[in-house]
Image 1: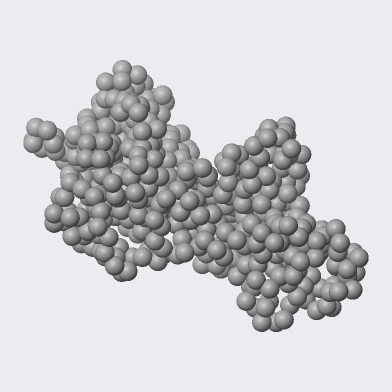
Image 2: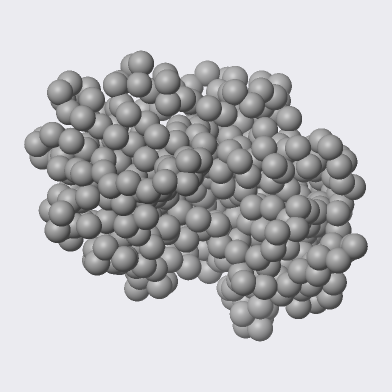
Amino acid sequence: MKVVIIGGVAGGATAAARIRRLNEQAEIVMLERTGYVSYANCGLPYYVGGTIQEEEALTLQTPASFYARYRVDVRIGHEALAIDRAKKRVRVRDLAAGREYEEAYDKLLLAPGAKPVVPAFAQTEDGRVFTLRTVEDTLALHDFVIGSKPKRAVVVGGGFIGLETAENLAERGVKVTLLQRGDHVLAPLDRDMACFLHMELQKRGVDLRLNTPFEGLETGETLTVRTAKGEIETDMAVIALGVTPDTALAKAAGLRLGVKESIAVDAHMRTSDPDIYAAGDAVEAEHFVTGARTLISLAGPANKQGRVAADNICGIPSEYRGGQGSSVIKVFSLTAANTGINEKAARAAGIDCEKVILSPANHATYYPGAQLMAVKVLFERGTLRLLGAQIVGGSGTDKRIDVLATAIRAGMRADALKDLDLAYAPPYSSAKDPVNMAGYMVENIAAGRVKQAFYEELPAWRAQGAFLLDTRTRGEYARGHAEGFMNVPLDELRERLGELPRGKIVVMCQSGLRSYLACRILAQNGFDCYNFAGGYRYYAAVHGRSS
């Protein structure tokens, strides 16, 4: 059996290695148009910033090392031009030699990945304008930063690459302006959770400009970025508007396409041609939570898909069971992570979702170095099916999102999070882990023990004439409080019940715990009360630093 693989990196290289482990006699040819077959794509921005100092560290395998270990014929600088499905041949161009030839296959795997989105008005050969997708892109950007020592940079796009690039340029001492078309960075997060990142970016000196569409470049003696809100002179620009599936080859070959012209595949990663498989950023996948066909451009799914394709090529029935978009990113001192779907996606899917928002510490507060995190867990009303989670915090954020991702995959109800037996020691967690706390909150909501009020509902609460109650200490209240909230400290509440009206009461504290305790006191004394989700810390982030 001869297998030709178009594209390396995650999906293609994983498939090649797996095929070899399953079939020692197979002939495997891998075609990669760049100069690198297997590299740390997610580590590229950190080489620009100097965290990763050795260029060699970005390269996971070379053609020589891949051949030595797996006997795979890796041909870098070789671009696949066309697929003749009837003859089962691929037309290839050797970019260095300039010659073209045909390569026959029994099975073909497409792993072309995705390409950066660059609007026509921004496509230029100017050496001060960059994208960041390949090792070659990274080396060019790194060399420019080191050699030209730019003082100013504009990063267009607030997604993963845009945020990581902005951080790493700032770490090099470059003054960064970050442009984002919408009202928040990092689309997998809801806006309220992204506001914590907005605060961090601004604190670190990044000029964050939300709701600012990118409209063009002027590449004269001075490089100018044009936006809907004016022009910005800069020394360099990085276009990080996301990626789109690189499927021109598949489309020309007549393979069935899916969402956003990605390659349509079944659960076995088989395309509409039974002898052609596909994996990675170029393919559509089923979302594990919604069941919808979607794009998930992440390394984890690409690796899994490559393995599944390899299994089926080798005759082992194997299925890719969908993805849920679990991701994590470092933004200066913060970590932002998510899994499943956010509120916007839930509404688009027609799912009636509820949420809990909490601000627990990452470990026992009496142990030095405790950090608060913002946790948001989404679940389906009625069934309590877990839908998604978002966390922004410091150490331990990744641990909690992985637990929640596993719970979603296992089909757990949101209230069952309280029953998880999680490891505890003061340097690492609390006896009631943040994940357990989310489960307790869901259980209380489902049982009707507490009702919630949310940030976006405050105008309506004010219009209804609800009494707004802040149960923090007088000192906390004096340092900052939400508009219209009156202060009655929790420990004085029982003695001052007579001061409160019998209408609706919205109760706030710093993180949501004391206000919950206050709600229990009030509810059992006949008051109609609602716990403000997330507390004042969450309110301050969303209200004060969101634009």
